[in-house]
Length: 392
Image (cartoon, rainbow, N blue to C red; front, top):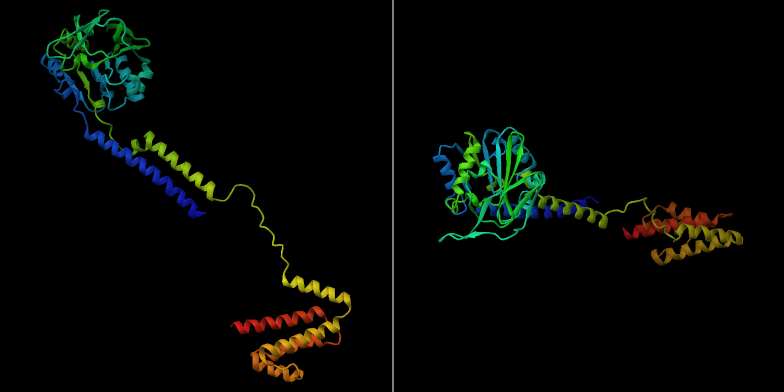
């Protein structure tokens, strides 16, 4: 039973190890493809130009690679730009809202690649975010040498816009959220939402392209930076680059990963199935099948009882003695005509057994009032000892 349990545990361990190895390999691949932080990236999709612009205008700017949600309370504005690599936890979302409660502004730009509900489920559930399709005729403006841009125009006045009226962006989808008010859009598609939250503000933007290097100098996009500096009120503007870094793979996070949990469940299932297939069944112990055959002793006792009822024990004992003498003659050359004492002496010489063994069997057979069962037992015991002696 122990060997079966060990085999089952080994199978489960192999499955879990294979899944964990695949996950580690996948995590290693993500590290190799690690993106540069957006706030320090000068490529088309980075926001280095926006960061430099704010710094040149005297706004304090910090780029955070860790604890961005926890430090949001120290900032005037926290910018979360299209977080894709790392998921905002429920605790982090709560800290961002606590920062807004104390007077900070939090601006979340949804990723362009996938809907926010898929990439940031905790944030989407907490703020009840819903992605919407583009509606109505979308105005597009083409600048030579640049990708076509959708024009985003304010629907309501807000300090975030810094007085701008025509913002260039790449709008693939709109956004809606409970308790948030649409304040800008393209065509009939809402792009920018706001929500007053105690002393601060929460903003949702459907695309981070408004601040990208590729479009920062188009239209009134620089006015958006002026608006961010204004609502910061002299406090720092934080660029969150923490959630653009691949997640750190630790033992704890690895064990909590759905792939590893699934592998562990499969391994446990394999162990249970193996034990059920090869192990002892549950329930009461079933009795062994009784051996229906009768022993030789039972046969002899039954035959002796039969002979007793025939009242021929004397003749049967004599016949048993004659058969014994014939057996000794055939196997050991002890003549059946020798007297009892001489036959006992010859028995000792030929077999190496004490003469008393022979005399006991002979006496049981030749007794004046013999007991057939006792006589047969004595002869059977003698033959058994002879057989054991010959085998040795």
